[in-house]
Image 1 (spheres, rainbow, N blue to C red):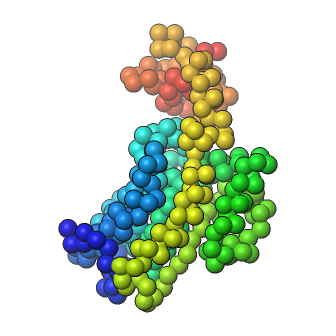
Image 2: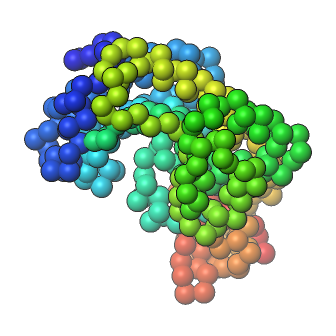
Length: 312
C-alpha cells in the first residue's frame, strides 16, 4: 500500500489521466498510486458518511483499462452507494425497464445506483451526488416523492440547506447553481428520463491547480460538502423502507399470484405480467432450472421468471 492516510493530490496524480495514457497498461502503476489516495480518502469519509447506515457500502473504480470502463481510464472515483444485497433487490426492476445495451454501456454500479462520489481526472476534482437516468428505481423514487406535498416540501428543504454555489445538472438542461435552480425543473425529471439518457447531479468542482487539493486538509473540505448531500442521498435512495413507488407491495401481490413450477407444462398459454412484454400472451416452449421458463411470443422466444407470468 502506497498511501495509508490521505495526504493530498500532486500534479503527477492529475497527469496520469492525459489522453495518451488512458488506454495504456504502462501507466497502471501510476494510476494505482492515485487509486490508493482515493481509497485513503474513502476510508476517512466512510466513518462519518455511511457507518451505521444499513445497506450502504463504498468502493473505488478500477485503475486498469477493461471492458467495464470501455478500455479507457480517464478518471477514478470513490463512491458510496447501496451494497450488493440492496442491488439484488432493485436489479429486477431495472432489468425490466432499461435496455440491456444501455446497462452494458454504463455497467459500473456507481452509475446504476444513486451515489455520493469524489472523482479525479485531468482537470481536477469533482465532489457530489449523482444518479444516472438508467438507475430507473432511484430516478422514479425521487419523481414519486415530488408528487406528494409532504415529501416534496421535505426534499426542497434539504436542497435549500446546500451551499448556493453548488452546481446542479438535471439531465438535458444546462448546469446551474443551486441558487438559480427552480423547483419545477426537478419536477420535469420524470418526463425527461423517458426522452434521453443523462445524469442528475449536484456537485462542486476544484481545479487541479487549487492549493487546497495539495494537502491532507482537503479531506475535511470534502466531508463538509458531502454531509448535506448525504441527507439528500438517504432521503432519495430507494429501499424497502423508503419505497415511494409501492414496489414492495407490488412484489407481495406478484408473489401471491406467482405461477408454481408444477402448474406449468410445455404448450401452456401464459400472460406476461411485467417487463418489456407485459400484457402479451405466449406459449411455454421450455421449462428451465432456477425458476426460468422460455415463452414464445409471436416469433420471438424469451426467457422469463415465474413471477413475470401468470396462467391464461
